[in-house]
Each structure stands twice: as C-alpha cells, then as structure tokens.
Amino acid sequence: MSRGDLCILSVPVQVGKTTRLQAWVAEAQSKGQRFGGFLMPDNAVGQRMLQPLSRGAFAQPIEDPVAGDLSIGRFRFRTAAFQAALAALDAALEETADWVVVDEIGPLEIRKAQGLEPGFGPWLHRWRQQMDRPNLLLVIRDFLLEEATKTYDLQGAKVNEGPWFAPDLAPIAGVLLAGGESKRMAKPNLPHPAGGTWNSQAHDQLARHLPNVWISGGMADAAQRAGHGPLSGILTAADALPGHSLLVRSVDRPDLSDTAIAKLLSAHRLTGRSVCFRQGDQLDPLVAVYSARDLAWIRKAFETSGQDALPHMLDPVVLPVHSRESLGLTRRSAAD
Image 1 (spheres, rainbow, N blue to C red):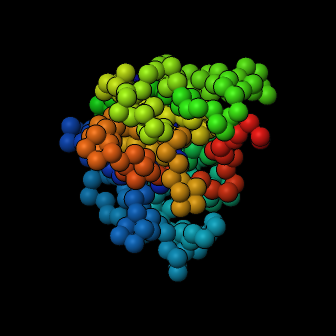
Image 2: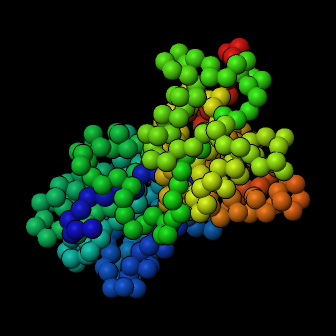
C-alpha cells in the first residue's frame, strides 16, 4: 500500500473490528511503523474508551452514561474526550506517522455534526493538502458508508482493503442450497417475479459477490447424510471444495438483499470466523458463512455423533437484525 492512501473499514457493528485493529496496530508497531489517531475499545463494563495511538498516551472514557454532555439514542459521550481525539489527529500530522486511524466516524458526526465535528472536516482537508501525508484509515459503520461518502467526499477511497483483515483466510465459495424435495416450493425452479427462476436469481446474486458458486442440488450427497436436511448439502459442498470457507444461501429467500451478503462477507473477512444473522433469539444457519475450520468440526461432530442441528454446531460472529433493516431474510413458499 502506497503512502497517502485513504482507506475505509466498513463492517457491521459488534463484529470485533476494534479488537482486530488493536492486533494489527500492535503487530505493525512491533515492525517499526508509527501510528497516530485513536481507537475506541470497550472497557470491562462495555463502555467506550478513547485510546490515542501515539506512544505513551493514556486511555480515557469517551462514553459516560452519567456525566456525558452529548447524546445520541441511549448513549451519552464526553465532549472533552472528543477534543482529545482531535488533538491526537493534529499531533499525527505533526509527527509524520505512517498511519492515522480514526475509529470511528459515526452518527454523531454524520447526522448531528457533533462529536468530532466541527473539527474533523477541516482536519480531513488539511490531511488532503499535506504533501507527504500518512495513510489514513477511517472506520465507518456499514449502514453509514453512503452518507459518510457524500458528507466527506470519500469517493475513490479503498473500502475494506488492507492489512487489518484476518491473515491467511481460506478461499471462500458460494453454495446455493437447492437440493430439497421442493415440498414448500410446490415445484422445482419456481419462476421468479424479476425473471428467471428462484434458483437462477439466487445463483446470480452469489455470483455478484464470489467467483466460485456451487448449487448443492447438482451434487450427489453422501449416502450416510441422506435425510439430514441442509447439513447434507453443506458437507457435500465442503467435500467438493476442500479447504474452502462457504457462504451458504438457501433458495427460499427471494427477497434476500445484496446488503445481507455483503455484511456476512465483510464480517468474515475481518474476523476469519463463521458468521450468521440472529433474528430475536434464533440464529439463522441458512444464510451464513461457514469457516473452513468450523466445517471440519461440523463434519467430525456429525460423523461421530450424528449431530445435525446446525444452530448448535456453530461458534459464529452473530449479526443481530434490527427492525429497521430490510435484509430480506424471510423464507418464502410457493403460496407466498
């Protein structure tokens, strides 16, 4: 990565992005790279702290449910901590850092012009004008990326590319689960309102995100897995794609959004772990990423004990589904 790059890390909330960034910063510092800016890790009780990245700097609370004088939703923040964050950004330009990290630009800045504003916009302009400027990493929640891009003119930034992603990731392939008996669909290859069939639309969606897509209905499941539902198709795909992680998508989700697929992939690439959605208290194992490591464990659990309840066989990063999100996770039948 060349010097002076503008990079964006944009993934769902609660997937461990700050923890991953802490590991990357520590490793890079051990190799002599210099950092400025700040991270916002949680403390022991789940409240955010401001951690400047210059050596010798001390963390301080930025979230304070009692004394915070800025609020958004149920969260209250300290103005003084944001002023310290801006001071850390100013120092980074003076100290010729290799990287400046801003964790994060959030709703306070983008929707209320508070928090790091009104100082961050002018600071970003100064960074752009600096001749020998450091690389800049902005952390922005996935659902705010479009707004942030317009607000701060971030077109052309490198989005979700960089050394902070999990190292040595297994290759990932898409798997369309379409190998059932069509009991809910009434007939195979049900026509899709947008054209083609439910199968073809689902396949094309996966192909927009991944170069390698398999349809489980086109592979013969091992005899010992017959009657074990989706697990059979998933393990058969894993047999055909050894060493791969799998993004699994059932065919009975005609409304599934590309945003849902992107959320799963970005969380997996950051953490290296399996990822699935949670609606209420239920995990959804049929729109999910299965890491290569978990697939090996699932295969062993099935072969030794016959276990086939997928929600109980994963240790995933869980993405909660909020009521305001339209991800299209609802399963449909021919009657719908």
